[in-house]
Amino acid sequence: MTKLSVNVNKIALLRNTRALGIPDVEKFARIALDAGAHGITIHPRPDGRHIRADDVSRLATLMQAYPGREFNIEGNPFHNLLDFVRETRPDQCTLVPDEAGQFTSDHGWDIAKDGVRLRPIIDELRSLGVRVSLFMDPLPAVMPQVKALGADRIELYTEPYAATFGQPAGRVTLDAYVAAAAAAISADLGVNAGHDLNLHNLRHFVAAIPALLEVSIGHALVADALEFGLAKTVHLYLEATGNVPLDAA
Image 1 (cartoon, helix red, strand yellow):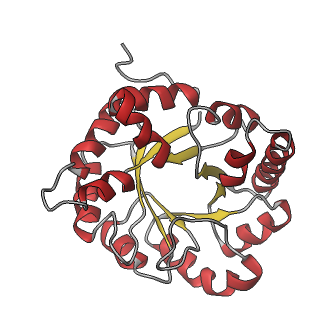
Image 2 (cartoon, rainbow, N blue to C red):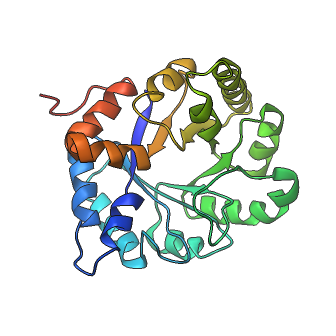
């Protein structure tokens, strides 16, 4: 079963445009969880343009009321990420190689360049009892190297898949992800995915990679929630991942 983790960054981004505390990030995370989401993802960045430090602690406390659901903190470990992880001990930490002022994540780790720096961080996170996932491009050959660093999972960066979905190049692109996932599984890595997955392309991706453990979705899901409401949207994404939504009626 592919689990759905709802990224609430865009909720926080909207809130931060005014000083009213609306929309309430914790409230919307609760709605998503009550609708059946398997977890909540946040990506705090150094500029605090969406998720802020107090959001991290509040959401960590909220997750305690939902046993069995997972809290995933993602971001660049060479910025301000590790203090959040040490404080809250999330279920999973997804390490992402984005720059401080980067608009959004747009590539995976270069293991040849960054592996030496990542190894002690991965060791520390695992010593804290936190599962470690590395944000990766679909490159089958590097998956054994990722495993050798001590990571538990990868998160496949899926923007290229989304960009070519429905186009002639789409099948070739999807095949690259299938091959990368197979290589990761062969290396004893779990496989997650995220970035630009939506209601149009998600079902096809999940069907092509049946062993996919988790998708983390924020931007498209929040955009769809403007049309359908958040609880209904979570139900739709659960259906697209092959899950039976809670309270689907």
